[in-house]
Image (cartoon, rainbow, N blue to C red; front, side, top):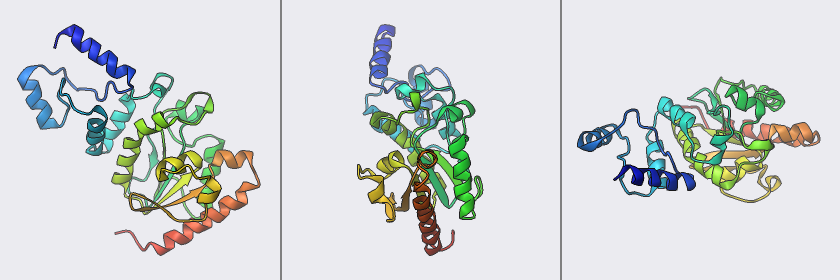
Length: 248
């Protein structure tokens, strides 16, 4: 392919929100590069496959370090253009409890850590209420890894582009229970547009893992009466974990 052709191909992929799907560690040319790509699992330039499927497949094979590096270099959706830092997730990588929020806010975007503002303090209090602590048998992540501008919810396209990363985190962590914090997390984990109220108080499933839905801490800061309902959800989560047996 000529240089002009390669440039045109990159432009088309970028317009579709699909480029670059990966970052090569070295420039790859000719047969030697193709053999290296095959041996290391890196994609071969010019290989005409379904780009989305290929990206998902590659992410599904990544370990923690490679996954984090891929997130840091990702430009698969427009959120990459306005972020300061990616927010990968934090906590115990062998946790029984996985808490999934919506996406980073301004403070998270600045620090690269999820739930560090007032909502984060409330989440820490929620954890403490059921004898949990951030980083100890708890992992915290979000549906998207980059901050949506103006504190808006992530679009379905943005969530879809980030979904393989969260899916791989779940595969690596193998949590016993997932807590979906807020409507966006519930919608994307459960693939439903049902109201949050109708999802509360019931046990759901994501990839065979039990899921409990509750309010996002930011919502609780704005809607104090909902804190009592959130406490009910936390008690339900603690009872549920008690029925799941011990970790292997």
